[in-house]
Image (cartoon, rainbow, N blue to C red; front, side):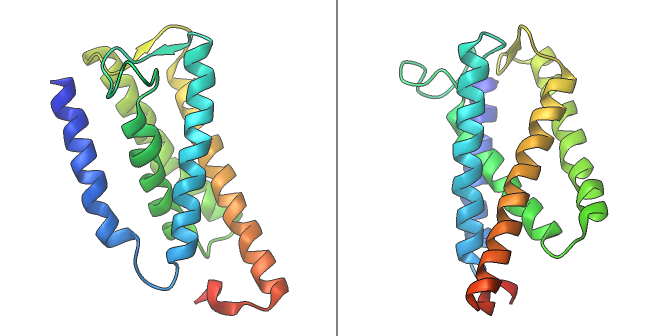
Length: 161
């Protein structure tokens, strides 16, 4: 079951590229995608290295100790969607919209930990997942906000279109 679920996530992630990475904000979307991939991979490598989480079923287990489909495709794509939804929002709306992603994601990961072999939490809880998900979303959203400000200072108005 786990391998089928991973394959489904892989196919859905690849299929979403055609819809998410087009239009005038392709640069920002790619920056979000790759930044989130790097951030998620670094955090997950630390968490796995300190034996807080284990991934019994994962792609390329002899090479990676983390789940690269989640870290390098699924999470970054969710972040691109989240940034698109919160791109022009103020802090209050951003906080509210972050709950739309963090809460269901945390509950889904908790459910999968209990009912599959995708995750094995050792020194990890639902609150850790919620905190790390929220932290990475806000970090990437803050990075996008910084890029918007830098582009405005340079006089490049394409980022706001």
